[in-house]
Each structure stands twice: as structure tokens, then as C-alpha cells.
Image (cartoon, rainbow, N blue to C red; front, side):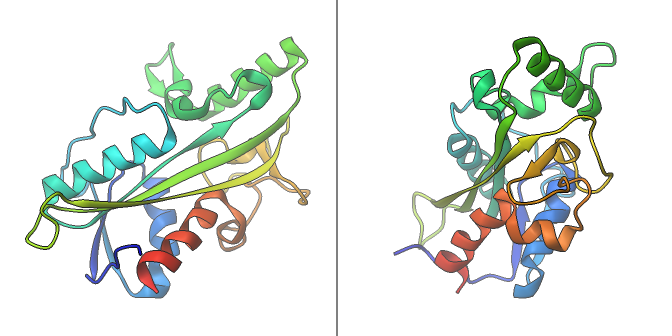
Length: 209
């Protein structure tokens, strides 16, 4: 049986404002107070895992250890099977623009479209998310503890991109069964079907209810 979360303060182990905001929205119904790793000046650990799960657990354990609080970490990304699964766990790194040295998702989406056109690749894609909830070392958890859940949402990549909502690759991704992109979708609707929402449903059922 999964360990239950019983506190009222949760660290969101991310320096990505979009993720922190989205996770906070998903947790509002539970009356939880969330604080970001950035606001606590927690360092970002090196994400050297070989999967979304490995990286989510690494970030959650690091934030829990350094803050002394239960921490929730997300590792997510866009997977394009026809491109060998890229950008996958390197979705953020894929967006680093060599001309500016900064993360630029407009640049990343154009690069993806160029690669798909060059290879005539299938545009099917999916967003994947791993959520890890980690407890710090304490009397009840002498080795710490972590619970991890996965979610996915399938769709395809469109060009040109559409919409200014969401973040990351959202304006390029159109979920199966919809005629608008995540970039055009209102946040409350996206939260019902997204990869993060699917992982959250499992997390809430196991650790919060």
C-alpha cells in the first residue's frame, strides 16, 4: 500500500514556473500550500537518470533531503517515436538555443518540424510524465521514502504552431480526439487530459485519498 501524505505543506521540486503553476492548480482542491524549490533556493540536481522515472525520483529525493519537507517532482517530456524517441528525457536540453545559450521552445519546435520534414517522419507523438513524491529521512522513514506514478497523453505534432497558452511544446501538440493544440486549450480543460493530469490521478488516489 502506498504511503499517505498527511502534511499541509508540499515542496514542488522544480525551477520551471510553468510546471510549478500547473502542479499548484492540480493540488488546489486539496487545500495544500505549495512552495517551489526555487523560492527555497534549493539547487537543481544533475538529472543524469536514464528515464523519466529515474529523474523524477532523483529530483524529489534531493528536494526532500535539502528542505526537510515532503517534495513532489515531475519529470516529463515529448516523445516522438519516428525520431527514435527524441527529444524524450532531453526535452528541455533540446530547447537550448546555441545562438543565445538560453532555453527557447520556439527554436525547439522549429527544429523538431525541420527534422520531421527532412526524414518524412510520422508526426505521432506523446507527452510522458513521471511524478515522484518523496519523504525526507525521519523517525518514521529512516531511509526516506518515494512513491512514483506515470501518465501519458497521445497525439500528433502540427505546424505551424498554434496558441499561446501552456508552456514548452504545447503549441505544437494536438491530442488525439481534439482539433486544437494544448497551446490553444484552456488550462482547466488541459488539466483533465494531460500526461501530468493522468499521473496526478494515480498519485492522488494512492497517496492523498
